[in-house]
Length: 426
Image 1: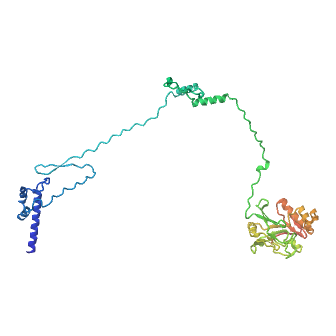
Image 2: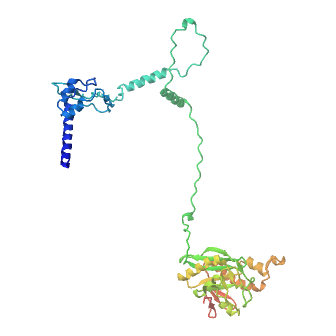
Image 3: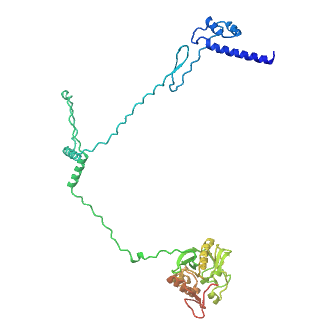
């Protein structure tokens, strides 16, 4: 058998199977029949249309050889909107479908809006009602009667209505009663407070000058007191008097009371000195320092020797005034700033103590303290200290450091003759 013949045979077999399936669907009885066995008439009716080979094969199938097909499973309908109903009606052995329109949706109940209630209107006769209410409250008793013991109610009066309650006084009546009582009460006398006596302000109360604020660059003046161990720093503005800015404690000074006479006597000097810019030592071995200018013109006129007497930091002294590093830092800053601002010289006055008559007499043996051994033994410096006191008193009285002149054996202040020399810096 050739391939072509094989293909033709398969095609014929497929065509016969297709025709047999169509005939079976057309001529088989309805599925609604409950009998699983087909009748001979029906079998012969549809088998006649089949080919001879297929017809003989269909006739050899015995009734009941195959079990009846199970009924189709019924699925639960999904909750969906109502669909169109389809009814199957037989008409001239032709199956057809009839569609019905969907049911209309249920009508929604109408919502009736209730009107918003309005506030009650104000009565027109409000004033008349208030007057009637006041009259009724005025006629009411002022207080309720005191409670008394009530005997047992007889049976005859058990069903009697209760007696009417007395009306309580209103708030308006209580206010009116209170005001009436206050008007009828006698006036209360109140003691009058004693008024304070005013005094006039003093004439100079509003003429006081504002405090002066000092700073770097102001003019500087220095005073040193050996016995008290103090250094005073005085400052002033251009058109004012000197004012004490601060008093610094001297950490150490050497020697005793009295002036320095010669080199290496470990004595601190006394007198009037002046410091210029050349005498500043910003890089001293004792932090900061400035040379006081010893010996000055007076010291040289009187044959005194020595030098390098400083006001410096630290706390060591061999004739100098040690102020500690912290103290000299501020003192030196003011002195240097004043010279940078235009001050040519800074006067430095060194005294043995505060030169009062009592202090000089105490230290020179001119007071009763010398008899008890409480005073000093510096009689040979009496004239010298009285000379220093002249310059001390000028500053105490005027607030202006005097210009000192060296005139041989004494200092002169303000002016001197041709033989005197002004005390100046280097």
